Image (tube, rainbow, N blue to C red):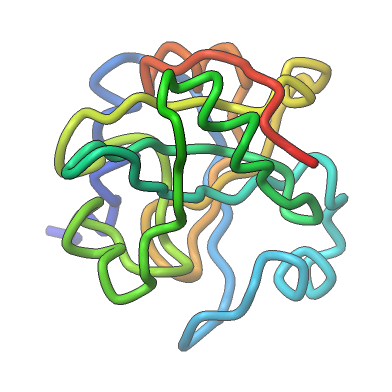
Amino acid sequence: MAKDNKTNAMRILDKMKISYERNSYECGEFIDGIHIADMLGQPYGQTFKTIVTKGKPDAFYVFVLPIDEEIDLKKAAKVSGEKRLELIPVKDVNRVTGYIRGGCTPVGMKKKYPIYIHESASSFEKIIISGGRIGEQLFINPDDLLKAADAVYADIIK
């Protein structure tokens, strides 16, 4: 019997009966999203990265934005109701999310955090997000992602 090599995110989407396309690619270690998109011939605006921030002690917020954009921490703080946000250190990504850098996705994190997806996602039939491990991507309808991640659209980029 073949071993199920699906990620937690994929299993959650399957359980919720949310359709997605899986794309696997060769990549042994973290490479930023722009280099992956270039390598795979994917449009930057349709390929999204997941950023984790921290507000008040132990208050974490997740933001999903196009790979070629930069998070605006002031806008992000405003939508999250915090006075100030800061990016979490890379060394804390796994502890906070359950995923590793380069494989972090908004679906199926260790705990439930508020999640905000940049509003540009809504203009696409499908967006590309991490599949939950390095070398895995998901092509998913952004409204389905909103449902799966219990997220909202927001203006969060500079």
